[in-house]
Image 1 (cartoon, helix red, strand yellow):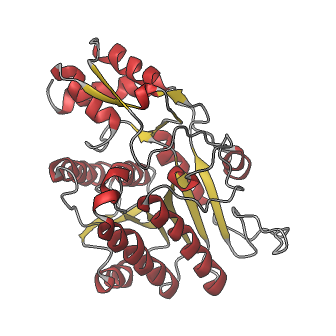
Image 2 (cartoon, helix red, strand yellow):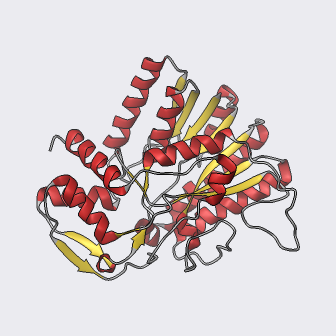
Length: 340
């Protein structure tokens, strides 16, 4: 297929684009390559995608553009005519949303609107897009299910991603555009973002500087390895969203619809305490962490835990990489990339 992947210079987008080319798909990437974190790691990912395209003899094109530029988005769709779209471009990060909300409006609201419009007008077969486990917000019933209501976000980032789900449903209903939203649970692994915990912890532990351990290490996360996420993204993209014939407006299911609309969790279905996550990093690096114990940060939730029964039942896939294995792979990548 010919698949347009937004955010292909980003952490997850890079892995997805690479896997698509390795299986023989044509990939059209769009990324603005901003400086939210060091652009050099993004440029390095792009160089690997160029190399992958040469090795696999796959069709590949890269467009350096901002999704908030509607004209640039429409021009890309007009020129390349993708069959399907995987939207992974977004302004990410919980902390950043507390101080820079406009960045999230531009990327996650305006940019996503432009993607929806382009999909609508260019006959795209299926739009798969990234949401986040953060939409569960103030919910405390575990594990988190797609069939729960998610109307109490705890930060603006989560609010914009929930808005994406609602916007997608409107387009599925109005224009019969099949859409699938994927709620990612704490993604980690090689080529990760430098602002994320695993990257920061590994860097500081190897340098012998203290790490900041929020909530005194007591909160749990459903850490999900990036290869498992990429596989889940590709498999759900392959399975075009369809209507739920049993859906009822009298008892509306948030995860499905009488429109071609679906939402899935993608998580490891095995929460790990932050303290144990840090132990896995210590084991992989061979060094003990110096810990600065701190309270829970504003906007953070104490625990996440993904119910993936819908993903298993509908797509036939379940993430399975153990945290110790995934962390060891990341540390090996980090040592090689930074020559540590």
